Image (cartoon, rainbow, N blue to C red):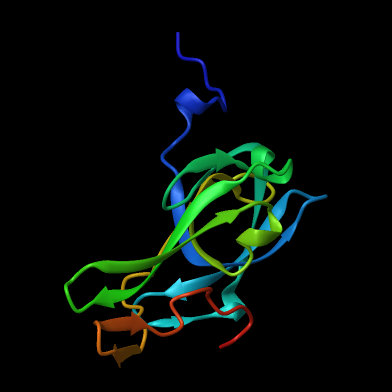
Length: 162
């Protein structure tokens, strides 16, 4: 006997959406993500999508993972942002903690979601460094002790900028 249900073991594969997390509504448990359009190599705020999240929605960072509930209750998540490459070939990075849901605003994310009759529901939110086709201008700093190349603007992604 086959039983049709909407339980996790019977759901179809998640879809995914790459973009900049630009807003969230903690009361409604919704996030708004402005897409990165790979083929056009640009952000398109006019095509933003809203997703519903649950307290159990996973949030995966570069250094650790947690849930939306944990972030909402003040538990932090370890992050790293690559800022350049030294002359000796080592990566330079900035380590920091994300300590709230608000701190996710302006981060590049891949939202894994299921379509529902209302809003798509996020099952996992992955934080990204850069998206395919995205580039950043570089700078080179030469000091007497060591030379390095840095990535200018490798921080947060733009919100509301076409």
